[in-house]
Each structure stands twice: as structure tokens, then as C-alpha cells.
Amino acid sequence: MDETQIASLLKSSELYPIPQSLKLSYGTAGFRADASLLESTVYRVGILSSLRSLKLNSSTVGLMITASHNRVSDNGVKLSDPSGGMLSQGWEPFADQIANASSPRELVSLIREFVEKEEIPMGGGGEVWLGRDTRPSGERLLRAAEIGVGSVLGSVAVDLGVLTTPQLHWLVRAKNRGLKAAESDYFENLSTSFKCLIDLIPVEKLESSRSKVVLDGANGVGGQKMEVLRGFLSGLDVEIRNTGRDGGVLNEGVGADFVQKEKVVPLGFGLKDVGMRCASFDGDADRLVYFYVPSESCSGDKVELLDGDKILSLFALFIKEQLNSIDDEGKETRLGVVQTAYANGASTDYLKEIGLEVVFAKTGVKHLHEKAAEYDVGIYFEANGHGTILFSESFLSWLVGKQKVLSQGSDEHDAVSRLVAVSNLINQAVGDALSGLLLVEAILQHMGWSVQKWNELYKDLPSRQVKVEVPDRTAVVTTSEETEALKPLGIQDAINAEIKKRQRGRAFIRPSGTEDVVRVYAEASTQEDADSLANSVAQLVKSFLGSS
Ligand SMILES: CC(=O)N[C@H]1[C@@H](OP(=O)(O)O)O[C@H](CO)[C@@H](O)[C@@H]1O
Ligand SMILES: [Mg+2]
Image 1 (cartoon, rainbow, N blue to C red):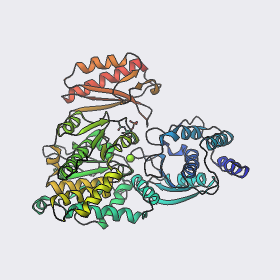
Image 2: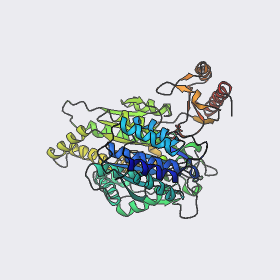
Image 3: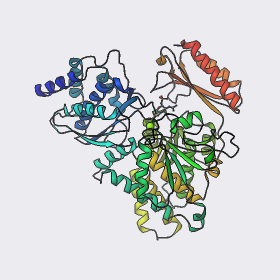
Image 4: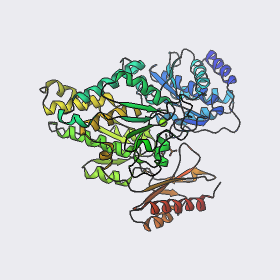
């Protein structure tokens, strides 16, 4: 790094002093905190993104400003690698170091060391695409990111404005593959592949289709983008509520996280919607859940939830049906399903029953994504509704080759075409609520299923999640699949003793990667048992770790 570069970094970092006592970690999904504390962090992540771009031969990197389902007063920042995937985990420790550097001098010396160690070619021109969700703090933070990007000399920031997180990942991926990468291309791609799937629905199934889906947009970016997407679509009737324009607050009593955790309707929904197919996005539209108000509901606030596990099951069933109709010429196509410890036990049983290979990954989509990428077709979902379907390059080119030689209109040609359409529709970079919703809708139409019929695939085991505030959550250390606690010593035996007392009991604890809490998950054959198991385990956490 030459003197001019060092001077540039020192000068800009003086503008963004780090607030006292701020200690951040890149965590499960980037840096998150109260928005008022984050300017220095976002500025530094701006520098990081330029370095990442330079390291990868000036490929375009994405920088997203969002705190997803968290409060509107929070914000956050995370990077998309040129592939459209999450920032390489190998760079996370450096991200932590620079975000926490206490002075401009320390910051610059950390950058210098890292540039040398990683042999980053500083002469080139990095390129970073910036996106933000609808949070009011987003614009100011975006300016800090621009300054950070530009303080690495020769690098440029391109402001793409308000986007969903998955849109930014999709655009970055498309750009680096030399494809058309404007926002309109994203919408066009989704609507064309959706239309392909609808056109391939056998005629006899078309009758029950076309009922309306009602969307809760979490008062965030997702509902607004769905309004745009709707203009590109035919064959889908969507009513959009909670767009954020009618005075509602982002994520407050609305959104996928709220609906999934509380199992009640979001604001704006109620008795009038009994039986309707409803869906909910989270604040940056990378999570999707479905729900309906059951007919026996008295006050209209309890919902039947169709979470990420149910969406995963629907996708898996559909993909499997198509694969079964294709002669794979002895290739033994590998279809794999990836879940986390939070997946409802009934969903795992169901997936295994239909003959699928199910593997488990640590919480956080980067871990699931990595495992799903090992298959020809890998489907992953977190119970909270984040997930997607990955097609390997080699399998996809084999499919496309087959599509060309098979005779049009044959069952096999249709099945191949459906898979190709799914690979175009579903975001290959990250979980995407917009494309996920379109795929669910297409599959329901294909099957001729109502939301209630879909819900009957299996019945969820009752479960309960609680959070425990403790002085130091890092005192909890778990196994790689997070199902057992290795530390504090003895706690797992105590948890096991509680599990044994309940029928179909299962419980685990882990430190959250996004909040300063230890999370407890419990399930059992009855809701009372799931609740009491969660409470007993929470008590154990308090007695082993102390409460704060
Ligand atoms: C139980 C739960 O829902 N955990 C969420 C939450 O992570 P924690 O590390 O549990 O705080 O936020 C992550 C990022 O959005 C998401 O990937 C994950 O599934
Ligand atoms: Mg999100």
C-alpha cells in the first residue's frame, strides 16, 4: 500500500470515529446494531468490500444495508460475494477486526497487514454495488459505505437504491456472469420462468388454480417490490397489504418473523380472512412463510402456520416428482435436503419417509447453502422461511441438453422443462421471498392443492422457542450441528434428563449469532410438554450461566 492510499484511508476514517464501547461481530448475517451506532461500521465494511473486489480480479461485490426482521431503529450491513453467495467465511475475522479497530491508525495498520497477507492487488479498480432496505437510516449509512468504498483508491460504488437483499445478490451474480443485470431483468426473469411453469400445468388441473393469495409485506421493501413484479405477471392474483405506505411500521406486529414466532396473524389480517391463502415476507424479503386463519378460529388471530419446513417439503415433493419422470441414464441424480436443528421433527420424518436424503447444518444460511451445493439438486430451508433450491452447473447443463433432444409435449420433456424453469425462477444466490412465493404458487396450481391440503402433508410437532439473557452467551459451546451443548460442562446431561420426561421430547440450546441471548428450542408431543420442556431448559441455562 503506497503513501497516497494510506493518506486517503486515514483522512476518511477521521470522519467516522467508532462509538465508545461498540463491540461487533459479523455473526450469522453481517453486522447489526442500533442504526445510530453504525456509521463507522458501514464505512469500514465499504473498505472491506473494495478489498474483496480487488482480491477477486475486480469482480463486482454487493453491499447490503439492512437489519432484516429487526426493529426499524436498527440497521445492519452485509456483503455479497461475486458469486452472489455470502461473504467468504475466511474473511469474517478480518471484518470483525476492522469493525472494532479503535483508532484510524489501528484501522490502517490492520488493513495494511491484511492486504500484504492476502496479496491483494491494490492497483486495480474495485466495483461495489450498494443496496438498502426501506429503513429511514439507510440513506445516511449508504453514504458512509460510498465513502468507505471510494477511500480505496480506484474503487467505485454504484448506488442501486432500495432493493430486497436477494435482489442485490441476484444482480451481483448476474453481473459477474456477464448476464443482463438491471432490476427489470430480475423481474423479467422471474415472471417468464413463472409463466413457463404455469404453461406446463396439465389442463385437467387448471380448474382449482387462480385463487387469490394475500401478502403481508412487513411494511418493508418486499411488498413494494411485489407490487412491481405483479405488473410483469399473469396467472397470479396477489393482494398486497402492509406495504408501509399506510402508516404501518416496519416489522411491528407484521412480517414473517413475527408470524412464525408468535403464530398469530399480522396486523391487517383477521376473521375476514378465514381460510384464505396468506403469505408473509420479512423486512428485507429473504424469508417467506405462509399461513391461514382456520375456520374454527374465534377471535381470528391464531394462525395455521406453513413455515420454511413446509415450503421445503412442497418443493422437495415437486422436484422429486419431476426427477422420477426423467430417465437419468444411470447418472443417479443426487437430490439432497438440508435443514437445521430448528426444523420441526415431523418435517424431518416426512422428508425421510418420502425417501429423501436429509442432512443438517448449523444455523445461518451460509452453512445450509454450502451443504446444499454438494448435490445435483440441493434444497435448503431454515424453519423461519429462508431457503432456496440449488442446481449444480453440470446437472443443469445435462438437463438443458436433454430438453433439446426430447420430443416436445412428452411427459419427460415437460418434467425436464419444469426443472429448468424452477432453476431460473428460484434465486440461485440466496433465499428469496419473491421467487419463493412464485414457486409455491406455481406448485400449488400444478398440484391443484389448496393451502389446507398442502398443510396436511404432515402435522407439526408442538414446539416452543425462548430466549435467555445471560452475562456471557459465548460460555455455551455446541457440537457442529448445534444439537448438543459441550459447555458449560454438565448442562447437556441435565437437559437430557428433562427431555426424557416428555414424550417425543427434543431440546437444545445455542448462543444466538444475531442477538445477545442464548436460544432454547423444545418440542414434544403436546404443547404443554413443549412449553414446560422449554421452560425447564431455560431455567437450567440460568442456573449454569447466571442471569443478566
Ligand atoms: C432461531 C432463528 O430463527 N435464528 C435466526 C437468527 O440467527 P441466530 O443466530 O439464532 O440469532 O437470524 C439469522 C439471520 O437472519 C437466521 O439465519 C437464523 O435462522
Ligand atoms: Mg431477512
